[in-house]
Length: 247
Image (tube, rainbow, N blue to C red; front, side, top):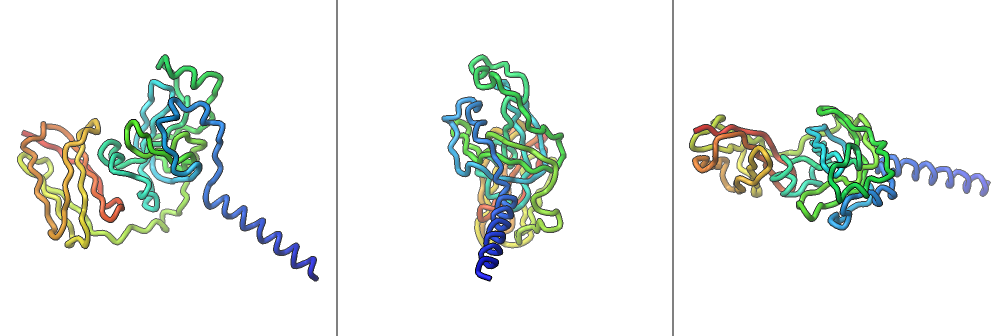
């Protein structure tokens, strides 16, 4: 009988280990680091994690990597920092290595002898990305870099991704000529931080909304064009979108 208990305990521990591995998505390839261009610039927070979200855009970089912007599902908004909002439209950067032709002379050695096997998704696909969670100290934003794998699917079923209990944020008028108002559905219990960036990611303004439901932003100084806004509350993503300034 004692032997049976030991066997059952061993099997339970085995299943628990497998469940933990699958839940965490810890399936990363350490050898990829030898092909990271200027890896010294990356500060590692977690050597391996899985994140899910929708593909927002893909940028083919000169160093051979593909710069993927991922709109993360709500459980992962904590991975974003202020520069992700101001410089990357509120998206998490994910970089598969050497996935396109390297044209940058000092980066060619990093991709030498390496063949990318990571699936490159299309814009709009909902995917699971696995890789190392880092901060790019040269740019300031957070990334999954290097990316070990990308698969189509969800870590959380869409029905289980519940919105945070946060007030709704509306903007008007849009297009704007001389001002733009940010309006909350209720008075915030803590500050709402709003960042505005232009069409190429340059910071155009940072504001705080607190103890009131409306913030008026003077747009007279902004050149005509498209702008993006991102709002955070209690380190959670509240809202993001775009507006047009016309003269």
